[in-house]
Length: 250
Image (cartoon, rainbow, N blue to C red; front, side, top):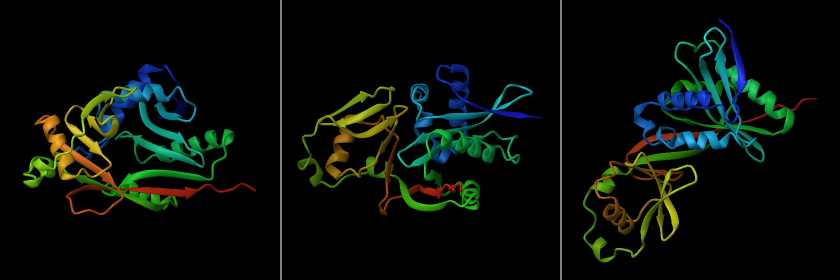
């Protein structure tokens, strides 16, 4: 069995669709609902991102069957090659395909844009991946906490909340890819995935939570807060930013 690594090209819809499906299937159900990969509009983002050179995607193709068996998605930042996602299908693991994807991408990118750092984010519960990245010499530099605020949304709020309710006007507006963005007085405060899961990076006050409840009613069945602060809420998982310096030649 042999494999070829290819750069995914803008307009190659068949491969783009296969990559999107791999993203959907790769995450555990305990976290997948909070990720944009599972939203039906993610495919629009994926297609559009390939139009920019800063968003390369590399795939591994099984030469015997033409099946996509691995993918690595990157973003080129000012000083960092950021790995957004890397997947190797079950049945093809244990053959160093993920390492081949990383090394190939490094070689291709660094030819045209020398960058000092390589970085990625990994969930704490993904024990095998976390250990593997550490063996590659990567170190944790930052932590984000993913909190489940669903109970906070559905529970009784303080009695004073009603009288202190803000006059902020909420609305939903699709962004350029179709993701539903929640606006408060025309300022984005959250994203709704698949019509029922709210993702925010700012802890809503009780009065703001009441506004959300009045606006969405029972349409929401999950609310997730992503923050670098340690708070007293049920935790879904922690994500670690891991970084490694590229070796300088010569």
